Image 1 (cartoon, rainbow, N blue to C red):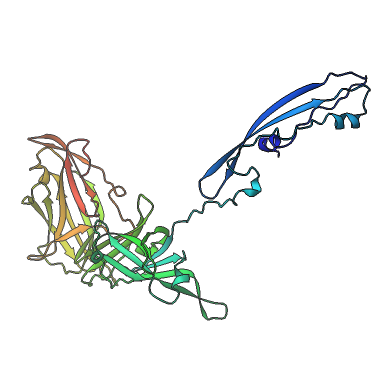
Image 2 (image 1 turned 180 degrees about the vertical axis):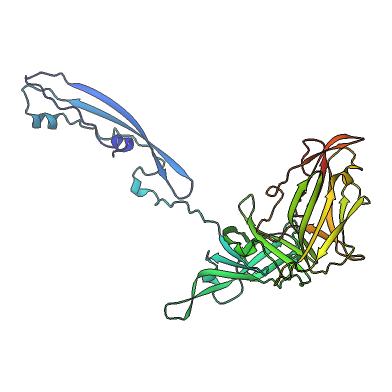
Length: 402
């Protein structure tokens, strides 16, 4: 396709004379000035605009006889007077003189696949983003976990990134294009949110995005009840699309299970880890408004309820009116704890043994209406906090969870 700039740079062509009679034409002089602009792309984002101004003087000779079509076309070609063309380009007007266009290269974000195992370990596979070529046989590349809200290197965990291997056709191990890092369940990862980065050869850390997250082994996970602590690591995508690990480390732990609601009461059932239950166990509701306000109810703690199972179960029933008696009219949260025996340390009741990192908006329960003597109607119901701990909220009608 011919551009306006190309048309401006070549002589004009007059229409073909198709008349059938001879005509006598006076000599005329036509001055034609054209302007054209052309944008030449250069490397990067700089663009240069070229303006070409051409002045043509055309003389038409008299015609005495009827010309043939061929002659007419030849004779009516305008003759451009030499030295009449004025060109003031900033750069050459032909495309071949411009630098070759280099398209902008968008570096794709690095992604890490992650597989969780039932013991609490995580395996990360990072698709090669240029790391393995530089450090194929060293541990210079690392997967770095940094706890949210801390800026010191003391609050980070570094895991070596090494080329992953796979079995080749001849049965021999061969390397593929992935780098692998492993976080064993035996490595302590304190509670919190740990952002995931990749770092190579002393370079700057780069935030990773989640690839395929295989969390099937976390669904309805049941650790050994005799273990002193329960470690939970759930990888997930943040609201900004980055990869983060939500970690819990509880010793011991009371895992909330089924919650039943009826007639102004709630019944909680669950499993106990890292501690033996004893007669005289209690459930405690602790007020956040006033830590000295604690309401207790009896709790049952049992051993294995079925053959071949080592699970330890607990259950308790809490009436909302026990909490509403000291309600002062606002939104008041009560945290739930389990004391597995007389003199035993209280254990926070929470739900963390699955693949849901944030349950507050996922696990929701209906509220029940109450009437108090001092502050009128209220609503009460259970909910999970941002840390997946179980709590109860007493609030005015239409109130939201704390």
